[in-house]
Image (cartoon, rainbow, N blue to C red):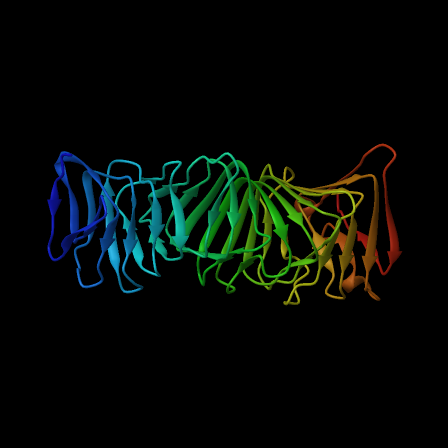
Amino acid sequence: MNRSLMLSTGMLCMLGTFFVIQAGVVGSNTTPSRESLTIFPAIDVDNEMRGFAAFEAGFTLEDASTACLFNAFFPVGGSLTFNGGTLNLNLDLHLTATASISDAGIISGNDFALHLPYKNASFSLPGMTFVDTTVVCASDLVMSGTTYFDGVSVLDGGGNTIDCTNGGIWVEVGGSLLIKDATLRGIDAGKLLCMDSAATLSLNNVTVMQDATYSFTQGDLAIFNEVVMSGEQKFVFESSGQATITSGAAWYFDSGMTFSYAPASSSRDAIVMEDRTSTMWLNATTLVSTTTGLRLTKGTVRIDGTCTIVSDATVEAEAICFGDGVSAANDISVEVFAESGLYLTSGLLAYSNVG
């Protein structure tokens, strides 16, 4: 076996017929090598997975104070044990089909990506923290703990399912997370959230499958392309921030869903539609508003099937309102499909288009 190994401090241990390397810098930028299980110690400040080293048997970070730089060219296999430590990416990290993450820690991506492996069933992810990282799924993903996304990060589902039944996805304070091309399962209270008002969650081509009532309680929400809310449950917008339906996007509420507008602020205008191509699509959906009222402008509302409005309003200023009654530029288009209708069961609905 050809090995290239540089140790700042450390040792080479033999367990049976397997080597366990305790090392600072492992690998070379000139000579290929195949590495056995590698333990990176906390005492070393220059831990590095370098160049042409192939880490086929995994690695371990000694403890939460351990940091290691990933700067290697080959995919990594085996067990990745973080013990709360930090892996800093200087290149994209690809995991092989033999790889597993057995303990939580931090991956600081520096705008590089973690490519999860293809599995016939699914890949399980413990409660990790990702900073400025793109996480790319090649198969279904099971969140086995709460995973935190900090900085500017992306979770690319690759068209797969991300199961949050026993875990969650939290956007860290001031962070920004884009989830795209995914079906989110097991969503209910505390599973998908922003940790403060400065955080942003963006959804792009995502289906959110709720198991129970789910409230978006703080931060901003952005809708790109098509986002589907499903599960015959209630989605409650409670944030003091905004939910923006971007140009060309459709926020689709599937049959049996309830969309409740109950913001922490006194704003009627927290659902922002950028232009006429921004669409709120209600399919046999109940639209609910507190006495704050809800005012929709500029975009398009589609009524598909029998839809119901439930308003707590007692005066027009508290009503659910289409248009602002001031500018034709803020008029909203209301499209009612065949054999469909919008029915007011309580409160007030105001049609305030100018044009």
